[in-house]
Length: 143
Image (cartoon, rainbow, N blue to C red; front, side):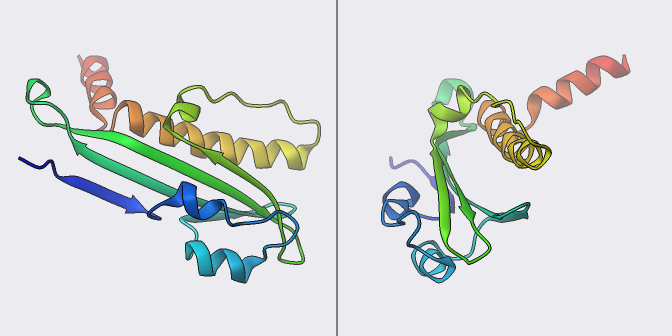
């Protein structure tokens, strides 16, 4: 029996992002290759975030709950001229080990906080895709 796979986001994100070239690719190139971003943010430069997530049913012993087996995130920083200045690619393992880097400027701190918060929420979804832990904590606190 073939397992059901649920796919969300940009298919083959890791492979597609390799064709984006720093200081050369522009917004139009990015949209042509990846489509519209999953989410955006504006600080000194534009931040565009793309995701690819694949889920499948886990084994029978886990009652067939959905399990995330691919969770990739691409963070692109685009300057005021529309040129790609920075790209960071994170896979599922990276998100398990994510650490925030101390920022030296307030703008840098805001940008890092946004990315850190986004990545933390993605990590939480990997660890608890159905939000069961939060429900249990709420039930316990109401007792």
